[in-house]
Image (cartoon, rainbow, N blue to C red; front, side):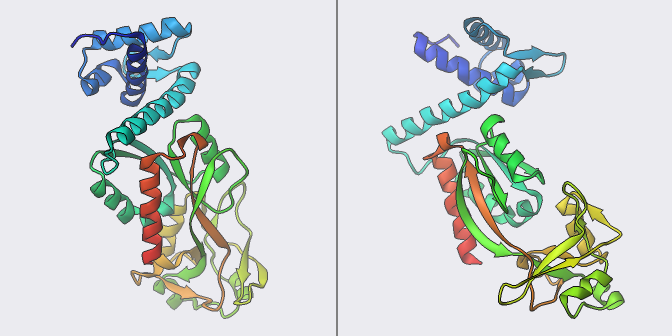
Length: 304
């Protein structure tokens, strides 16, 4: 294939090539995706580096890694290319056809609950490639990833610190207390919130291991209960599995009770209320892929 004429078009191709190199991990792999030879890909990268006056990638024997300057360019280049694609789609009037890559971060437990919705999203939009990053990192760290690491969007649970990221409320829920039938048979159930102190409680490790839980009655009055347990984890998936295995009482969502593997305890009480939001960079406002994802997630909420 021949190189396109014209500086503007050439510059755009260089950005598109650089983004694909980072996504693919090598110039050879990027060439296969773009339908170009490795020599063409190498020339485009070299031309871009020469014009900017800085190295954008570190070459190793196995993989190509972006430099700090390359990482910053990658984030902005992806946004530029998405804006160009959105503009072209609007001009052509093909709003029904979504294409491109969507990089989404979700908390570990939300990934399981959103499995059906994300499958439907891919089925509805066969031209979209979904890249899912599953993490238990706090919202503040994920917000930083949206701004600096090239994430398109993130599902955020709980309080969201002030930032330049746009957030959209998807749902509001509350945690409940539950245990596996095997645990209840062996240890019984707490009758009142203070009884939790006498049970094995599956505690989350954040900055430190949880030592107390907030319990709310039907009028919203809070009781803070000291808790402890022999098992704690920083991974919510591990805690969910421990709950299913009968290792203790844990906090979960009402959706976890649907398969009858867990039973609710303290049914007149609940844990803290939490919001589920979709966050994305202000520059991505109006992105058709993000809008389609948000619409689908909101529809899934309304069906519950």
